[in-house]
Length: 114
Image (cartoon, rainbow, N blue to C red; front, side, top):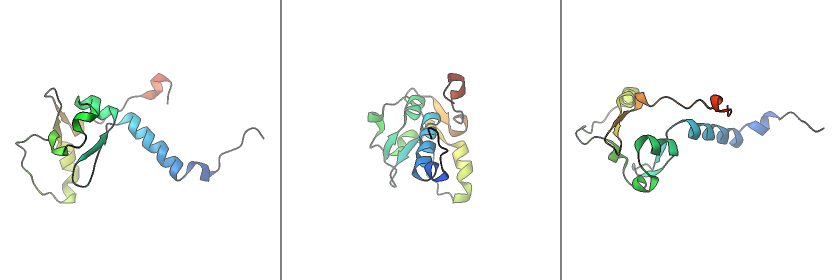
């Protein structure tokens, strides 16, 4: 046969993980850190939103995005959602970005890619 239905195994596991990772990378601003908070990489959406080139931030500690007058406070995991909602970061041009403001994604359907 020329056409065959994909089995569940064909779209599960690593293949589906890649599809999801690619979708997130296309639609969200993401940054990756090591356990000590050192920036490993960031995608184009993050770099465009924050106004940096990867070479400027790679190897730096993630605290470069946090205002210096915000105190270091140990917070229990139950408060993580509130912390993320109020998270702010400074862009290179001085603007402040709040995590709650950055929850939109491009609509690829309007560009024929969805």
